[in-house]
Image 1 (spheres, protein in one colour):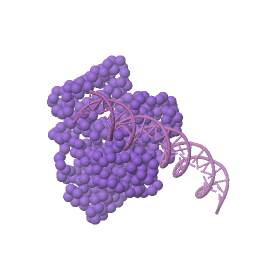
Image 2 (cartoon, helix red, strand yellow; image 1 turned 120 degrees about the horizontal axis):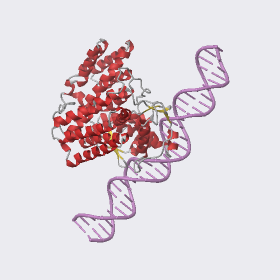
Image 3 (spheres, rainbow over the protein chains, first blue to last red; image 1 turned 135 degrees about the vertical axis):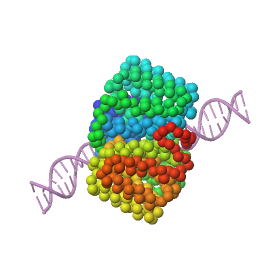
Image 4 (spheres, chains in turn green, blue, brown, cyan; image 1 turned 120 degrees about the vertical axis):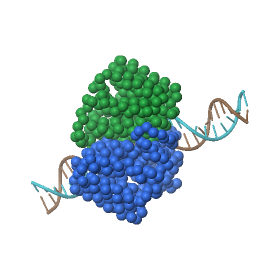
Length: 233
Length: 233
DNA sequence: GTTTGAAATATTGTTGACAATCGCCAACTG
DNA sequence: CAGTTGGCGATTGTCAACAATATTTCAAAC
């Protein structure tokens, strides 16, 4: 498994490492159970172990890896039914609550920013760029959380969003069409712009539940055994 | 603000620091906005800045502090309406889903473990030991999450539980009586033991919503549906 | 008196070396 | 031969010094 160096500059090494590993895990370059040795990573990414350690701890909080004292860190399983069953309602709780606060603050520039995201999503959808569509999807919803100025909601959203992203990547190929995703966001934006709060909430709620999107996933009541225990810190 | 040294031995310094700070924040020895300088902490707790940094990052993920690149870390506000409005439904989602899986695994020893927690809670309640009651309350629910063997649910629960604990400490003095808390857990346990899954779910759901417990708070937010609210933070 | 900008300061970000702990396995003991 | 113990290699945990960055200070110009 080869990890190439850092993406954008001008951010802390910890953030760069976290993003690199997150991406590798979500894209399947790293698979559940794969070991992540701090020294290997520090060699490959050409930095000391300090930032690596901090990034691994962060990914642990995001549920992407599991680590055990003095024994190491492994990639966790982000693709069980559990993620779907638990994350969708949590996401709905957060976004609906945040929307209530964000809507009051939204001005023309905010709607335009959302519109720009939707436009770019449309372009990405037409060229079949799944990764870009997903990133823009996340950006759209994150903007609502940001504008709500709710510290804990945004913080928790950041905590579950990496898992959601993993879910999207897994479901993407099963979705009927990328254009439909863009179209749904356009409708959602229209509802937000309408000034009808009830309509906005209802549209967002339905958008998140999104029956078509999850239709193809295996939905069994079978308990899913996770990649490892948690050593309650 | 004086922080005295470590609690239990035989755990990593990071965990000790995290617990010390968590406790100080929740008990109000550290207040929102207070600055947390890595060097000060490393002096006070007599260790290097490494473990301190990692503990601060963890608390950041738990929503207890907020940090800014090259600018420092401050204690966050864990006492807004937001915490209540968002955390209660999230907690309900996690615990109800986990209970479904845990109930199948529960055997006599598990029920007895829960029973022992309730008994001790009763004792703590009779002596007016709020802190102990709260810890046992958390332990009761955590045990359900543990037995569900759901990696992500437990992980997310650990993420929100520090905020819940803060909420409990704030509400404790307003609660009608500690005995009532213990009694409620005894009833909940009976429902779990009954073998009637529907009863178990319903009792847990009501237990979490817990109208009496939140009655005294400044406002009664309506979590999941559209309604009036206020500015937070 | 206000503004500007560069140096000084305070604070976090990063590093490489050293210490502690764990799992494994061979040697030992009964 | 089963079970225990003690060393060994692998890996994470911790430390103290150094680098990078943001904020503050303060003098000079307008």
